Image 1 (tube, rainbow, N blue to C red):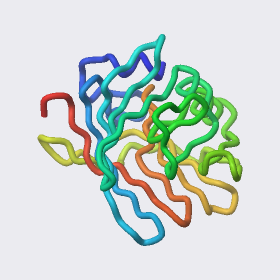
Image 2 (spheres, rainbow, N blue to C red):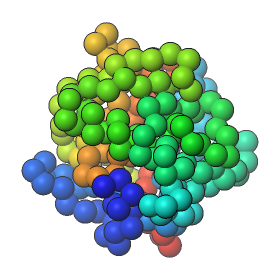
Image 3 (tube, rainbow, N blue to C red):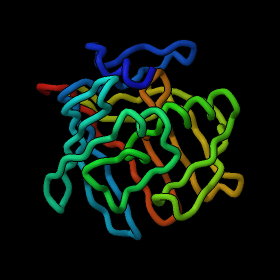
Image 4 (cartoon, one colour):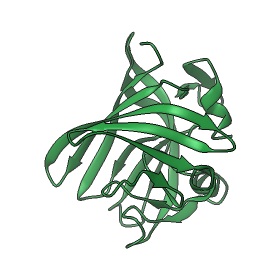
Length: 192
């Protein structure tokens, strides 16, 4: 479901029963996120370069450190339970960045919880699904959208929080780790 939603041509696919919209990533799609790491604010832009069921997801990451490609293998897209935002290598075979894996998404949907690491495997937390909604704000080229569907999850103590897009493309719309936040601010389709 995750990879197949990347190849749809519609930029805003309606998702029932929430009646909100889903941002659909295709080749050339760019997402701009704001990162607040220990009160230092920066921006990162992720541009999808390739997406296939056989190979996985190739993305260019543009940040203050320059432009660098990285690749989430098909294994990472399907099975990773580890995320890492501090040491992004060119190949992510066992972890993700900006998206959660199909495995974590399915566990959150079906079981209501999933054990994940947000720091490359050093520490682990149990995220629990709390509710669904469809009012996440994201700027597109044409307008400000306030109807993006998401699943809100957090740890029991509320220290770690995730807003994960629903509708088949588990893009992390926002995450709050307590010491760092990442928020999707802008979404552009190829050519916009």
